[in-house]
Figure 1 (cartoon, helix red, strand yellow):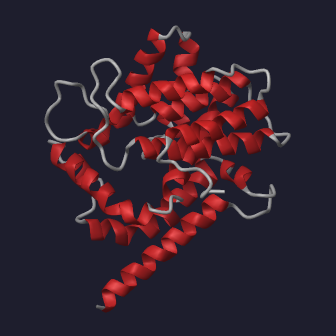
Figure 2: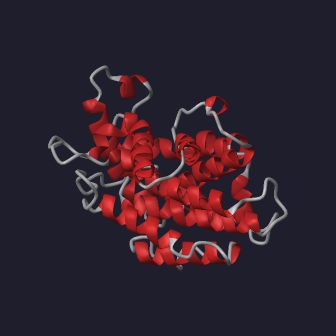
Figure 3: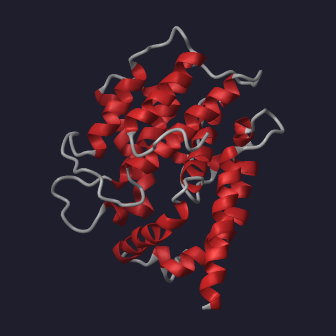
Length: 287
């Protein structure tokens, strides 16, 4: 399943998400998915208002495509089950828009000439929330839908206290938890995840340098790319696994095929990546 869609090509991802949406809501708005993917292409490529093209090298357009593809798949599989609360067409639409905006906080304005958008790592969730609000307000979305998208984006914060997010209803919370789940699974299951870890470290290092009070270092910042790679298996086992099971209520299980007890391609791919990383680190240690 993971190899069938090229996440470097937004049109391929759009086609997969559109197919999921059409299956779930055959009488839905056939223009909505192309519209929001078009918006995403414009802001990531520097064609939206006074924003530059994305220059963060890990949290780039492909990263967002990995997440939105996973979310389309998860919500489709959940919709096939008698799960409550039932997903509505509008909440599906808002959830996908939330995923597409969740890392817009890495975008820089045209007059921002120092460094890359990675310097905003520490505050990128707040910046993404602000971006989503301005975008949606300018396109006539009602206040309650803007708040829904902003609440979903909040779910992607590393240290977010989910009990403090003021969800307007249980369905909005479910969509937010799906977004948080897929943000993690989409990137960690990618076949080049291990190869991109030094790029992720470079972003974090730039963010640390841009943090005047050293908060990132005080929060357990990695000392090197090697250190990040050494700690990634524990990040999966002690943070991500607990978060997707406990905090996000195990929604990833809807990707089990067949549901509920079949294999899960995303989890299997992540475990394969972690096993590969451990092998490579062990091989370096023997040199």
